[in-house]
Length: 86
Image: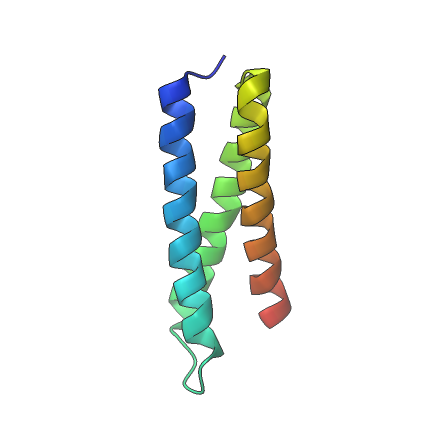
């Protein structure tokens, strides 16, 4: 079972990754496209985050799953933005 502090810490990491991903995505939408290497790196980071969330969801207590599931939905939504943009 996942510890509360571990879940809280991971959710904070998810939030920071999503903020970074949004910045990279916004930069890529400008007339001068952002760095393609940074864009690809962020896509990979989002994929890793999604996989970690999936693993943590399996180990989480029932009361932790809802918050983790919402974080996973946010990560997947950001992944979709990245895919559609390309």
